Image 1: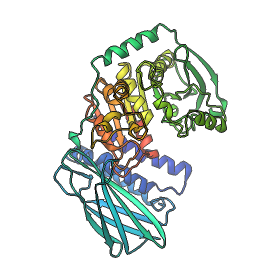
Image 2: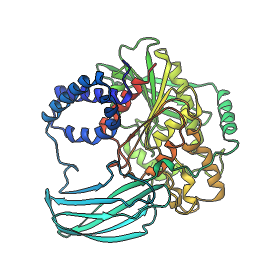
Image 3: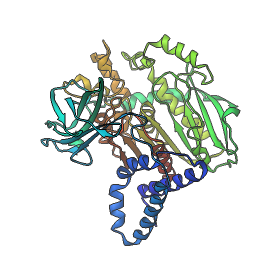
Image 4: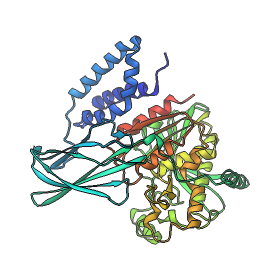
Length: 490
């Protein structure tokens, strides 16, 4: 019997927790983290599976196993080590509404676990835009209800709450969506989009790929090996990466995964954080994009960030007035070099080549699949660089890096160049399976732009929507992504 990917996730989560419990015996908040993750992962799938009598005994057994794991585990309070807890519960459990509906949000406030009477001021804004509605609420026994205004057009509204208790101000927010399946990107594909990138790819082929490789003993374990790789992109640019792979790797046996980085000028953090990829038989390449040796000191990276700009991410502005000179061009081409490198490894199985990443890394993973049909599947978390020019239309929300906040960036020429580098335009060309996850409370890569990407994809696609999440994914979700990639190995 062929199990669906959601069911595979479910099984893998239980197995993972059993192993974690047995090996680590830590006091983790597993039960809470799992139940935050589980409903959105399995809710529709479990209903469908229960309709099939053949599956009932299997599901029942798994649920019993889950209960056993959870009841043996001590949970910590949520949020971690905070004296206060806000609870905001929209009256639609998926936090989604149709345009014209008015959401009701139950608000609760606790300090030291005790409900507190308090005066709450609140505002409502379209996703990341200026508030247009405000009001106040008196919490009685720590509870109250706010009726939000509706929206006439598809998108998200953000309810921001503030209160002062015992002389200290506390704030919280919750976003709800309206007719989200109708969200469409502002960004249009240039008529010569494909021709432009085909020309760049042809130019890249004229430069022979070269790389260096040396053992990184500090990241080797009894199960995996790690090498530091330097890949030459073109005559001027290179990128570094750590390659992890099984110690007993066999020729022609292993699928490959490439992981581009999130935004910033920084080292490759914790190369062993995702060592379970190599432990599960993958060849995994974790990249940086600036050609900076990850062994440089933290101080050196900070100095380089300061030389670029105070925020550290201003390379995303560099050269945006000319599509041929934009900084991110060589970054996008480095993805193709990474593909070439992984294909050159004798241990690669010759078939499976996945991309996986979050934020800027999620964007680059999708871009890689849009650039190359050699990518066989993609897992992307809350992708950045998505519908970036949308801010140029009044009342619309755009994606990270939010160029509307930077003087002189939303000019006609720069908006034109953005279209050649926007994730939504690469998404139109993706044909391989895509797994995508995002949270509604994300103020870095807002849910509006994640839906703009999601609704553009015409390939096979699997969502994991975690409404409460801001700009982060849990370790459980990270692990489930690997399981999804394993499920798609052919």
